[in-house]
Length: 260
Length: 299
Image (tube, rainbow over all chains, first blue to last red; front, side, top):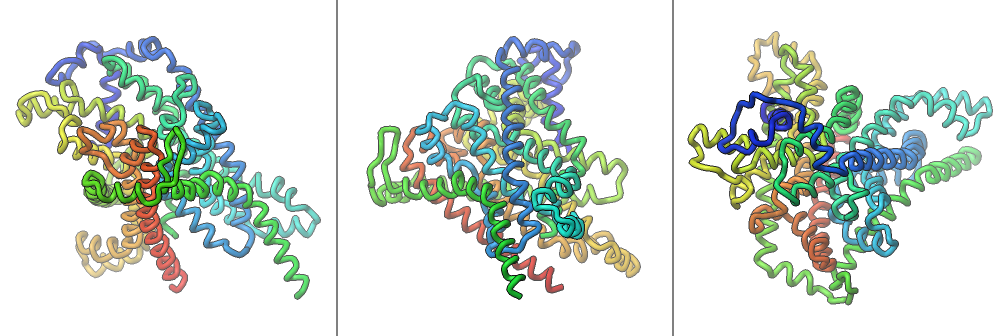
């Protein structure tokens, strides 16, 4: 427990302390003038910080929306129909989860370069979606399976089309599931931004928080209190979302893996 | 009969049509690049262009001592990291499953390292490991374990250990949560029966809990091995594979060759090795999963 929380506590503590207290060796455990000064100052030290935060949110939102668009029909199909290669393709999806993006970077880099897409938002979104699709399909499929098929059949008998069924019956009933999967995708893409961002994008305007801050470390003597403050600001959104919804997310993720 | 058959094939078409967009996307962004990587590994591709060079990349790679060292290092790194994650995860899950006060709060509190973007968590660890001003060096100096500032990431051995610890920090929460979920799925009457028979706490753990969650332990060890093997950001941010290659794992080496030096061919050859190893892991995992599923459906 201490092992897990100490880094966060120390990050927060460091963010409150003045720089000259931090730069004392050996480490001082006590500071008498704690303040939120670093949280104000960091905007000056890292002038692009608001932009990084915006980028992170923008990338994560677009990535998760696109993921949902691809995943909803596919998950529905897996939940409702029987067809050849159904199980084998589901297992292939699981296997994709095990490939790190690092293996695919070379061809992706070449293609993005050929199309002039390096250093754009797209360069970070396109590969991001691909790595969220497999788990999202598995998750959403299990939600769709919980919707009673009788409801659909009744509507079908009444002459509703597949599309109408999807819109008027499935969609409203599966809203909680969609929200969970959407949040999974959001947190997932927020977390996976780093690799694609440092590889496919050199432009500061498009950097998400992790790579923006990472770049900062190399430059000057690091103002660690501001660095930690900015990191915590970067962490806060996902942490807050997660704390509110952790029950659903954990239940969804573990049910897929444990029961299977 | 005929009618049924017709509707069956029609259904199949609908099913495929719904899956098609996602499938195409994955083929384009995952499957094609995989094949392309294999092709590139037989060329000397770089930013300048490419020529077919046959097995040259592979010959060079396998005959280089450095590469063999990297492979060994990757597995040693993985072994320590995964074992620690499993041990700490198991202990953590047992504690969180026990009837203690405030356990629901603790259940939430174990999770942050898992949710937080790894890259940002590592910025925090960079500060903790700081040799002059970091808290770990500070505690070491004050208790006299260290006789002066010590850069944990600056020396070969300590950097190796430090990256493992950071990786364990990231990976343990997830293992814990899955173990906990599995423990909660163990039927309660088993414990009650054992309790009536006067089994001790220890017995109950080793004779009931452990055997019951063995499938999950095995799956988690494999999954965790795969993720650890793939771990990139942790090492990259803390050390970039240094000092002098001491923390360069296969993934880091692949990345450095391909996108640090833009030697796509050589990088691709390494990526192919990574792929083959991952496929072995994945095949093993899927076979296991299929067996467990069969067992469940038989019961």
